[in-house]
Length: 243
Image (tube, rainbow, N blue to C red; front, side, top):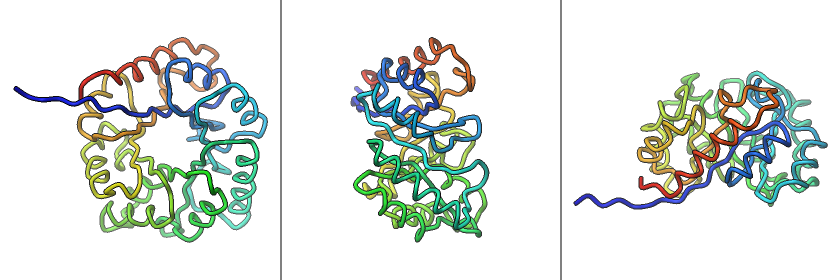
């Protein structure tokens, strides 16, 4: 007889508004990634949005720190803006920070990322999918070298799709990254996660944290949160399922 085990997990949901954050919390999300302009991949939320969401939610809120859309190679002035935004997020009682910086050669910028992580302390930092961009640019011999660079920055988490378009497509690669991380960093699958592909993603990756935006369910700037809340609830309800 085959044995199965039940694995609890944490589900982080990316949102860009107070109503979406409230819907995600009602549906059982374990954490919020708070952004502006999700249609552009997520930018730093305004101080007012951070203040409103903090007042309304009891679950952890991680703030995106990204001063502009586009690539992750930042000028000195953009880097200074990120420093200021991190300080503001700390003052507004965010629980964590999400960021990522690459060098002009599209390697992980260990030095400048480490500076921001030090500034963010004691808040934990998630290195976002700039990691996937570095892998797609083929600047690394393999993904494990890039993983080691992220670990060297001091980041607590790595958000990745395994360099694939979606996390389900990159599930095998994500599993290999989790194994290579060997508990040195949390590897969190994200991108394209839906209720119908989530069980298989969990089974393959054996990850403990997952990230979803559900952008196809809640079109950006849409005022209708019922379908969004329903989809988040379908994801979180799988906590009791065998993997």
